[in-house]
Length: 157
Image 1 (cartoon, helix red, strand yellow):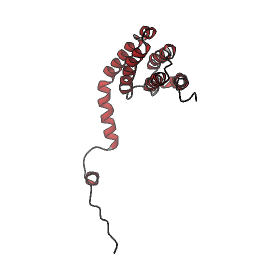
Image 2 (cartoon, helix red, strand yellow):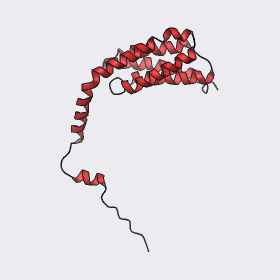
Image 3 (cartoon, one colour):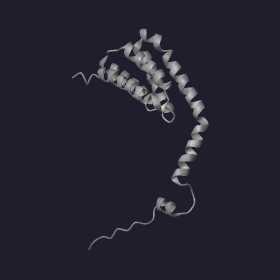
Image 4 (tube, one colour):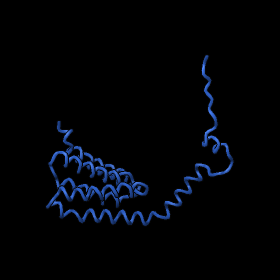
């Protein structure tokens, strides 16, 4: 005797077959319209975050570990804020900074120069939103990735 499997309609199946609602294109358009209403405020807060990060540069000559801890927290916020409104290299630079800090913490070899390059590059990338600047942004981001990979203690072995 073989078992016969039967599947009843799921909630999604019922909704798909029900008339009404938004098409995918309409839903995307509605989301984009809502995002446009907050874009200026979000980008202003992103610029403030980046300025706060840059203000930490002098502290890198002191307790670099503690300063990097603060920068890590700022960079994590940049990733969330920049994602929907900036080219991918902007949040990518913030992620790269977090990875750099992780690698330096794991190896115990701290480099204020590597952190400063990331901070300055983050500000530069934020100022390059145009599609025509994509190749330059990619080149800058590629350089940041090389710096981060050089700090990886696992890559040295």
